[in-house]
Length: 167
Image (cartoon, rainbow, N blue to C red; front, side, top):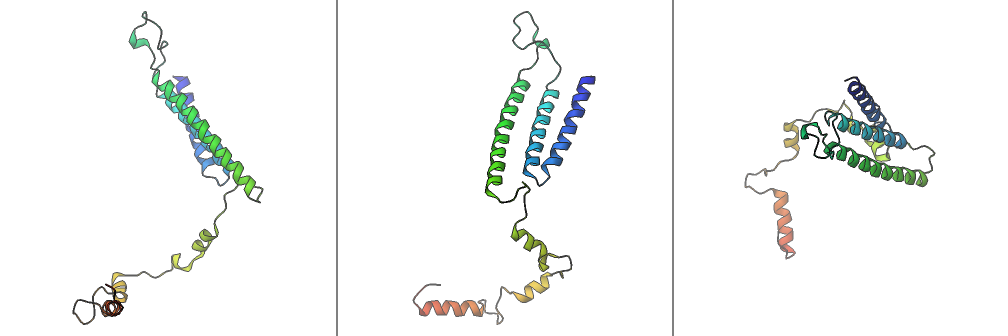
């Protein structure tokens, strides 16, 4: 039981550090965080696999209740392969971004559009609230004289009919 608690604590610490690193702006730290989360997931699969038993292919002299389940071990091996493949791909992306930028750090920078949106006056908290009455006062779906057709729509249809087109 002590080994399981120690592995459980190690798994929680690895998840915490991994997620903290993944939230950083440095690409290398994101990769290290991904590796820690992958290893913590392997520990999680190992811990939930159940109690330890005899080898799964021990022969006819071992009762089936005493054998360990080989499926969690296959899950762990599959998770190791997937983590390796994704981390190799991420490492290639980090290398390419480092080679194609002039910056000597691997921090992800803000786009110019993101900076403009953050500084925009329309997105501040001091903007006045627009109500439905203000919106409907500016744009109306109905015409002013009550015949069911807006005057602008009628003028556009008449201009298209003069040109020989359909509305």
